[in-house]
Image 1 (cartoon, rainbow, N blue to C red):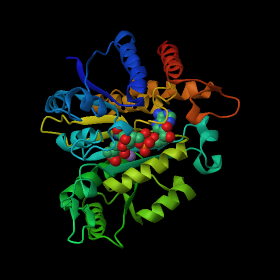
Image 2 (image 1 turned 120 degrees about the horizontal axis):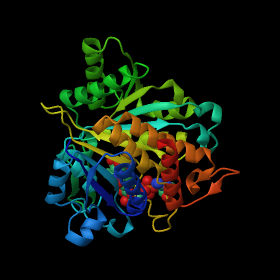
Image 3 (image 1 turned 135 degrees about the horizontal axis):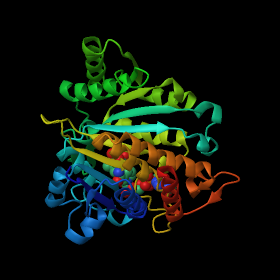
Image 4 (image 1 turned 90 degrees about the horizontal axis):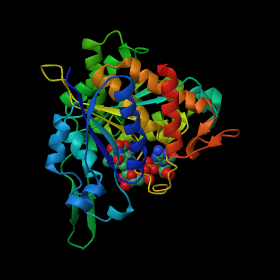
Amino acid sequence: AANKKLLVLPGDGIGPEVMREVVRVIDWMDRKRRVSFDLVEDLVGGASIDARGAPITPDTVARAKEADAVLFGSVGGPKWETLGFDMRPELAILTLRRELGLFANLRPAIVLDPLLNASTLKPEIVKGLDLMIVRESTGGIYFGEPRGVETLADGSKRGFNTEVYSTPEIERVARVAFDLARKRQSRVCSVEKANVMESGLLWRQTVTALQQREYPDIELSHMYADNCAMQLVRNPRQFDVIVTTNLFGDLLSDLASMLTGSLGMLPSATLGAPDSSGRRHALYEPIHGSAPDIAGKGIANPLAQMLSFAMLLRYSFDMQEDAEMIERACTNVLASGLRTADVMAPGCAKVGTHVMGEAVLRELDKLAG
Ligand code: NAD
Ligand code: IPM
Ligand code: MN
């Protein structure tokens, strides 16, 4: 078979630091598992602004469209914070989601046993948690029109953004959630603010109708987003799959990351619709950002990026065994007591990004026999 084409986009801040460790795992797979990846690396975010004058170029978008999968790091930082919205590093990831039609952002929150004591919540609340947040990622208030800032007659200003959802947009992301639930505990909780927003009420009605029509086997519940935030902290294991809007999904997934111990642990997959040949665009990235406060120090947790690559193997190439092996390697390394600072616990050894990456490689060697 032809080599699998991967576009690697490290980005800014800790992006390149954690990506370096993952590229070593990809090389390892080439050598030890005889799966060949054609890696193309490119600039995005602030790195692309500095070198090319734009957060992402049309060439890079074209490469992303040609690739079988995109592995994305993180973008942004104080250096570029004062630029306009048409020039910000963050536009790179928004453009990729939009141009590749990546509407379903899968953000799993899984509590690994070795990290039970790293969560800020009591172990008995989070033990065994396995939650999937499906965040809509090409619509809602992130992209709705009108948007902008205008100056009023009295010289004061007015900034505005618009939350917009159409029924097809709601249905396609809800289908992804229902299909995932079928392979899990068959429970979906749909989250919006139907009590305040028209787009939220349409969301609720559309998801309800779809469940009745196509997914009678799935147990559907609804929750307002504010209550959902509270319930995630009170009793996170009540949830199986959560499906929600772009903005609420952004907030709730950062919240869910702390149930697992650290933002540095959570991977994600962002998927488009399959075409007639079954091929679909897909991008994989940690949910964390470029972490300017720790960038350059070599202490970032590389596991969210590592686990994003495992998701890539699972969702883009159906390589379940290899995906599980990488996930197991990460769990075993944590169980051995090696920790980056963000998941440090009493009795563990604190290590940096590179030593953590090394340990995962050594563990992979062991697991592969
Ligand atoms: P952030 O996720 O970068 O960092 C939040 C906190 O979590 C920081 O204290 C950071 O040190 C910590 N953290 C994050 N990842 C970590 C890791 N792997 N290991 C250890 N600690 C980690 O969020 P922020 O500080 O609000 O944003 C910083 C920049 O990143 C901004 O420019 C923002 O727009 C951007 N951002 C980009 C993405 C992306 O590229 N997908 C996602 C979120 C934020
Ligand atoms: C994320 C990030 C992005 C988002 C930013 C960087 C545009 O926070 O992927 O969670 O808000 O979607
Ligand atoms: Mn976010």
